[in-house]
Length: 400
Ligand code: AMP
View 1 (cartoon, rainbow, N blue to C red):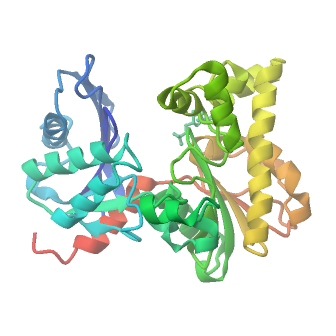
View 2 (spheres, rainbow, N blue to C red):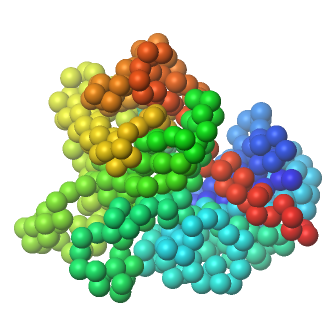
């Protein structure tokens, strides 16, 4: 059974075709700049060089068609016939309180995704446009896998904000959390690497990519996470501010004469390690600059690691203990210096890093010393495979 995984962003469509028998990606790619100038498809078949097709792509329907054409292409395609695709799994960012797991998409699900536009105005509309475009072209079941679903197990005391209760009643304003597919996937893999039953573990998972969040996981379930109503809360990120005194927002608006949109823009796009360093949101640049003596790059890295360590301490308390700490995503998987700096704070939890093991990249590896009380594990995340697995589980018995 082959499953197409789609991730439709505000002007892009990322895809992967996964063979579930071997759980292998047969092909992957991305249509960029949909509806704007410079649109193109970058396609990569397994064990073959990248193919770039520059072409106008005015709509998502054309982007989906282009993806299918690339997948069945005689030269660089991975399948012979569109009929080989058994189902489509869509990454959907916000499921609100409606979805605690993946679902087969029907009219009701689409309506619920639409109802969450207000909670994820940049992502959910694009996700739904992608679903509709797919329905036009492919006559197979489609599944929505929500970034928020994994965190629906959080107790009320963790997901409520201490605002007047009526605000929650009226607007469903609460902590939702994101990166759920990734946190769930790496928690499962970490348990396997440690040779333990996930139901017996207290885990803290650090997803450190362009966006970054941290999650406290007990018995395989999320009990707290650092992102909130939106992906802006919590850790310091590439360009996002993370936690900040809420009064600072109105202060800046008044002093700088900014509108709500302008302050949102500042907090999302020009803050984080980029805003502090004035240099880059990419940790490769920041680490190089810091090593060469750039004080602001060093400060950005120090602040970033300190915030992560503070959250780990808080979540160790929330979990009443911790059995393992996980690092994943672009920074978590690749930046040994960042892992080391975070772990320097965690000796009191029984964390001790083995420098040789910590120097490895791109593999599942325990990077703590054999004598450390609390293991630290690096797990490369694979959200596409996790989406494909959920899609497979929900559609394997369908008649298609
Ligand atoms: P992601 O959102 O998971 O794709 O992560 C992207 C981020 O990972 C980039 O912006 C970089 O900051 C970071 N990254 C990727 N490779 C490395 C590396 N070798 N060293 C440090 N950071 C890296």
